[in-house]
Image 1 (cartoon, rainbow, N blue to C red):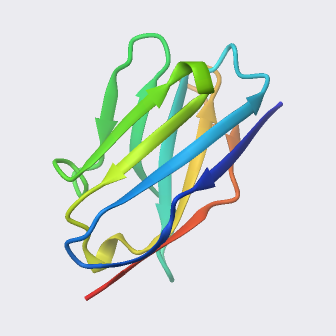
Image 2: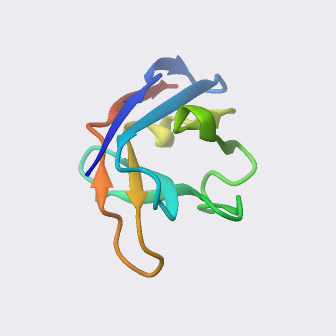
Image 3: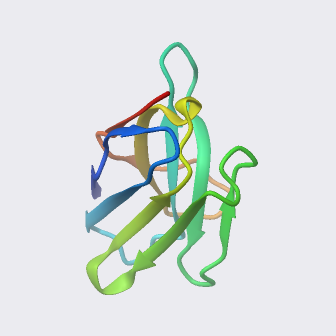
Length: 119
């Protein structure tokens, strides 16, 4: 089992920046990828970014590409999401997730951290 704890959310004005962290613990050795998702009020959860464990490959949704950067610290079992040029539409609860097996759904989810961007 994997436990995930997100942190770093908060209130920021449009154009500002935040850096989210996700610390993983438990059975993390076989993790295939770790990703960030978000859920805005009244909307379904959406993909934000992912980083693959072995290759280091990253991917981003079109809505955040060029503004957000995902990274990892393997020694700390932690991933980060640097969010720049924030927009009000970035507001939502941001969740960290672990995918253990390629081609399978994400297996573990954190509690989420709130990001609010004011205009």
